[in-house]
Image (tube, rainbow, N blue to C red; front, top):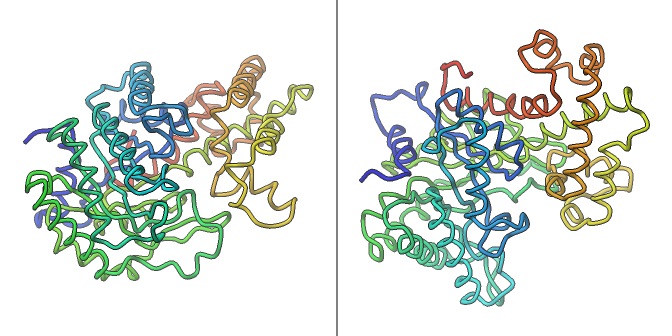
Length: 432
C-alpha cells in the first residue's frame, strides 16, 4: 500500500536489504522544533537538496488543547506549510511527525481519563496529516508506578494506534519503545549511560507484535517501522556522551531479528559527524535533533547582539531581555540547573540543555529579535565585526555566499548544523 509515510517505510526496509552495505545506508533527520527560523532553515534545505524533510512536534508542545506553544496539530501543520510556501518547498516533500504521543501531558490524572485525552490527541495528529506517530504510553498515571509493565505499555500503545487508524486508516507509520534520555538532556553525570540491552529491545518488540497483530492486524503491525532505544548518546548542561559503536554492538545485532525495522535515536544533539554517520551505518536510521538547532540559533542571535552593542550601544541587549523573561517565568528552567547564582545564570543562556528555547515564542522575545534584525539592517554589518563575532561565517558573508542580512545569517547558523546531519544521513553524497 502506498501511503504518505512510504518514504519512512522504504527507509526501514533498506537497512535489511543485504545488497546495501552499511557504508551506503541512508537515514533521515528528525527536526524537533517549533521555532519558525529553525523550520525555515530545514524547509529551505529540503527545497534545495530535494530530500524529504521530517519535522516533529511533541505531546507537551502541540496537542488538541494547545500545548505550551498554544498550537493544535492542525495549527502546527499550517505553520509548517506556510513557511514551506514562502521558501518554495513542495508540500509532498514534508513528513510531519508526533513524538511521545501518549498520556504524559495528563499523567497526574487517573489512567482512564489520561488515556481518553491521549486518544483525542493522537486522533488530532492523524487528522491533521501527521504520518509518523511515536506511541509512548510508558509513564504511570495517578496511583500507578512511574514505570509500567511492558504488557500494559503495549496495550495502551495499541489503543492509541487504533484511534489513529480510525481517524485516518492506513496512512501512518508508527514508532514504539520509550527507553530514551530525559527530554532536554540530563542534569547529572553521563558516566553511567548504557545502551539498551538486547533482551529489553527484543522483549519490547515481541510484546507489541503479539498485541498489535491480534488486535489491529498484520497491516498495522507492518507499519511499525522503528523502535526507540538508547544507543549510548546524551547531553547534559555542559557535557555530551558521544556514540561508541563498540558499546552498542550487541544491541545493533538485534536488528537482524527485526526485519523491516530500524532504531530511532533521540538526543543526538551535539554529536560529531563521525558519530552521527556511525549511528546511521549501524541501523539508527532516524536521528532526532532539537535543542542543538535552537542552541545554534541562540549563538548566532547573541553574536549579532554583540555586533549591535558596538554599533548601537544605546539599545537594550537581546541577552538582557531574555534574562528578564527567564527570571520572571522560571518554570522552564528551574529544577534543571544546579549551582550558585552565577553558575545558574550562565546555564540559563548557554547550556547544552538550551532551556532558553522555551522563551523565544514569547511576544517580548519575538519583538526583541525583530528589533535586533531591524537595527542591524541599518548598519551594513562591517566585516571586521563579523570576523570578531561570527568567525565561522565570516568568509561566506564577506564573499557574498551568505547575504549580509541578519535574519538570513541566523537561519544559516541553523543550517550549518543541519548540514552535518545531512552528510551523516546521506553518506558521501554532497549536500547543498
